[in-house]
Length: 286
Image (tube, rainbow, N blue to C red):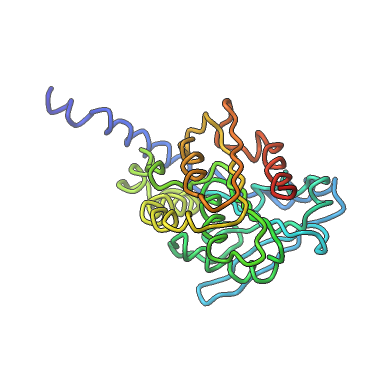
């Protein structure tokens, strides 16, 4: 009986449950990208359709879309983990927003139409976005959700020239509070890692790499000087809500606005888009 208790303890049961859940989330059952029909329907209410572009590298191509009037200020959007550019589709089809911004939404390395398939650090992913920053960032704004929030901060620190501000939305930005979850261990230490969709495998790899990436990124926060809006829900079960306060405290030379909501979860860009728009307005008018 004691042996059975040791084998089937609480942590082991969680890992076994994780293996089951992860196995069910195989590529046969789940997609993290919208269909062409869904995209066309979503943009039918605007005067625009998303235009695809590719930046070519030795390792592969990075895909992104542009929407709107190129004479407007550029708003560069970076999705989370996993995800694709169309995670931002509600924002990209907001007609009021398109009157102000030329939207550039990225497919990060490992996702959707981007063919970069390696396991890349935050710094390496930032380097892939360098051509986009040079091409579009003439007084631009960067916004990132979840993992994209951490990457947005990395990119902003790497390429600060002509950057107006950054919006971190439920961002994986704080090394002390970014902890691996039970399902990360379940995927990493079980056969499930060979059964799941590529997007989930890439996401899990990114979460493990953050343990080394974030301390390096955080070391430069005190010298960052642009405007930063931080949007965070207090009921976020994926990113510790204390990450937002940590980021605010570390950005001692930046102009910072913290936007928190008590009953908001991690999926802010869908549930509380008005707070993202509020953050953008603050950067514009500050």
